[in-house]
Length: 148
Image 1 (tube, rainbow, N blue to C red):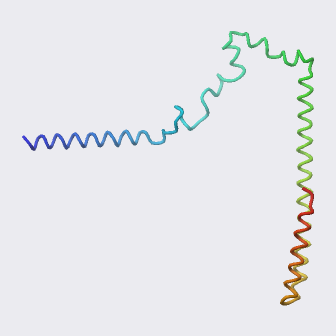
Image 2 (spheres, helix red, strand yellow):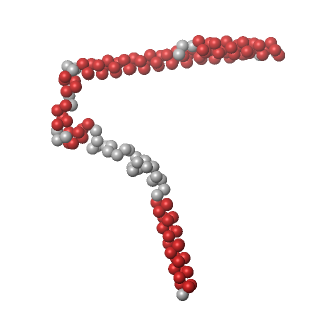
Image 3 (cartoon, helix red, strand yellow):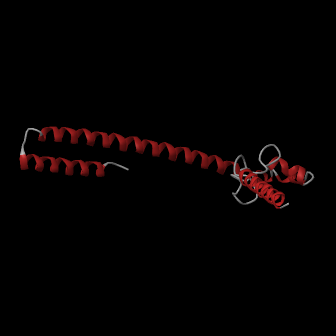
């Protein structure tokens, strides 16, 4: 009788262990909180989301207000948007030109530094060290003087 009880107790413990391992394994990767899955697009994305959906949600009342911003301002809103777009494009172009000019200047400084170090190679000892220090200082000043 005792052997049967021990066997049942062992089987019960094994069953509990297997069930616990199963629960832990199935819960892996799900503890991100906020009640949503971490992967994929956020809830509500796709066809049924955005400004086009508002007409359905408000039984057509939202359609009335769509074009009124441009109408009420007599097109000033659209013109302002165009001016802002043009200004943004010009700013990007100017920034690109400045970056190009900076790179060109630094490239020239690097070439001058390489030539100065090459000129120091014929010297020895303290004279060479002083020459290289002077070349390094001139290079640092040149790069700092390049337009940003």
